[in-house]
Image (cartoon, rainbow, N blue to C red; front, side, top):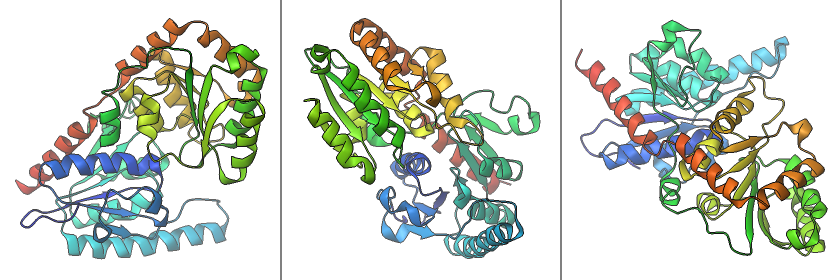
Length: 371
């Protein structure tokens, strides 16, 4: 996605994880369809997820995360953000973007702040049911706010006045996967297990053990695809081999949307992109929120899907092999419940979120240009 002659680019800023970069990628694709060139400002973690952007359109900006309140930690954070602000100020001066949009994470702070100080239209998009800390810092300073869930700013009317509900943009691969009908039940139950971009050790600990507790006839009906961290890969693979369960275990699934579409049930964390993709494609899930997040955003995200009837939310303290085995056995015995959960999940999804967000970006840019 490189610059088109005569068109001012849009600069998207995102932290270097899938949860931040996937929506940025989806917006970039929607803008590219309209002939708008897009550049990406991010951190050095983005190599794994930023492949949708041409190398010359990716700009690494220094940043820092608040990791403590002692003087040394605060000084390091200030130094990182200060360096990023200088880099961003220069980058925006070179690109002269029509608008800058941040997708969360501390790497978005320098580009969005620099743009606001330069008078460039700015937007933040938040993918979660609870606004993240970086976006909370930026929200009072930006031109507009895009949200994934309604009533996020119920207690902050000044911010609610500039908020637009767009949903969370999903990648083109997710839109394509959403055209796949829920798989017909045969002799095999396809179970997909993944823990977000960083993986999750708890899934490696609990899921194979739960499968081992199932009655042997039921156990043999499962075909499992599971994401595992490098350090867990061998033990997870060995566990399924010893149970004589068909399993594809890998550290990363590049075709995750297609795997979601091919699955009868998903066990996963409840990051924003996971919830957006499950609801867009329409697949039932057991969601295990990350327990130690300061904002409890994953717990809130999972609650949205659970309240709609599309997921079972299991807090990590309840996510034991025995509990998971009981849930799996109950769902396997009631396939119509899985079909109903798939439909309920789909009812929450917004396949047009990228287009809605692109409309907002262009409106904000046009409003500033016409002043």
